[in-house]
Image (tube, rainbow, N blue to C red; front, side):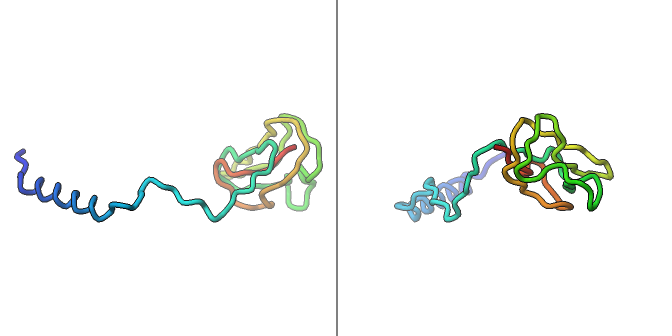
Length: 118
């Protein structure tokens, strides 16, 4: 394959012109985000799969967790239904439920924060 030297020279000239026009503009600087992320200390338990989160085994049933409830590693914190399969999500550590970040019947993504433990 033969490369046309005129095209390459034209491309180099365009790039040089672009470099000159951007002189004084720092392209590597990242502007401060206007939205501050508030980080709540504690253990975050995230969704292992994409699906629908359920806080109880049936509608109106007793919830697996409540804010302030003490749970142990391995306890089911909720169910994530995916493709008609009910997947129990276990707690990854002992703790007290500080925050429940999803509502019953809410769709969840992989890696989405479900709860925070103290």
